[in-house]
Image (tube, rainbow, N blue to C red; front, side):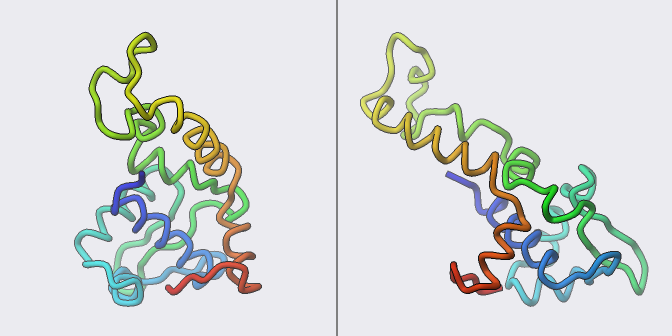
Length: 144
């Protein structure tokens, strides 16, 4: 459902929430190395998130990226909207062009509709802060 770019964006925001204190910046090379994401690709993702003020960035030798908002103010949906947009919540799950038309849905449309709604609800309510807390208590495995 999410693009790899979006998954990398979520991982990077979680990484910064865990590793960058308030006002602290982490260099792109360190983030790239720790997350095993190519630096140029990650740089584009982080710049996009910074452009929308989810992250803050500073150029120069002591520069890097940090959170632009408090973790409790960043929803998963904020990241998804910036990187992937809302298409994944409206397009046909199997890619049939006519499926978006109400009178001619694809064979999976009605079965997938409730799942799509639940995923949308999760993304609209789950914050970075809550995910970090869940990681801290070992509720969910997450290797940064």
